[in-house]
Length: 390
Image (cartoon, rainbow, N blue to C red; front, side, top):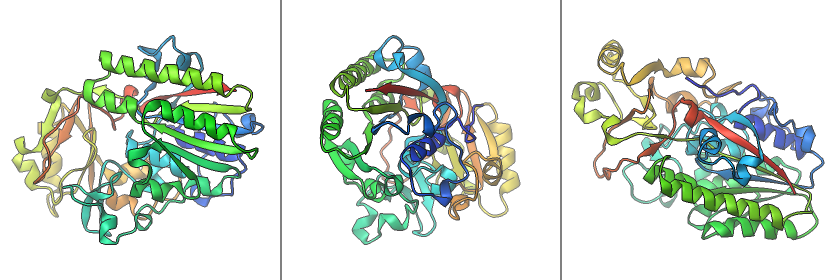
């Protein structure tokens, strides 16, 4: 089991270092987190510009294995951890807010939002069963995503470079704050946008640049696939080209990821419909992730639920009371968001080895990805810290 190191070795600590380097306004919610031990803010506070390149899904194990020998690998500085759960909705929210899940309370792909009375797909800001975004019903995303965007407290001109199909999503609009948004269509556009921004104006800049190309390929084809290797080589070449283009701009380029991957074949998926007795003990569908599922148990069913999991599913999952995970610091340090406890249910199933767990609701397309994340394996939890000066 590999847990986040919020005391100086996690992506939230990296954000604290960036805040220090860019003379950020103090943030009470972030005060519990020290700077990243491997990259103190003072060590790069003299850089004119800072680029944070988030390569969704690029785990440390992958970069040190199939990705070894490339430009990204040559600039590898350290191994750091993601947050829990090790998944995009949770970790990218940390990059955009500078706080851990303990404070931003975005706890996975699916979350029970008691204030709305529904389970939502958090990044899409719509009900789990699909349909239109909740904003179409007049619900403001900022009323749910309440953590302050990190861009609003940095002493620099801020930009977010993100794929065109998500740049103006409700989630992005709520988290970009005062940053200027720059969309791109294909991967080369990400790097050309960064270069153009750095070449414009003389003010100090912070650029958050994000790509999900690696993540999307890993989900579909798996972490050992030639398709993923080809996608990695494309990203690595574009990164190398960017460093050449921006030479002399006094820029520190920090490349990092939100999580890594494990492969999970369909045979390793525990489907709730095969365990109807367990399903009847739940008051809501599963929330969170296939690798870390939050369970909302019917009143009076706790003992039966624990017994079933510990006797029938012990080979594939470890059972935790969610309140104990909060108390033990799995989600972060310091005071918790008042919504956190209700968004992680009564119990959390943390899946072992390559297992996942899944239920299906009415109208939901039955599709399982090969590559998965969200758990506490080394492959999922550890991400690379990659540094290059230009």
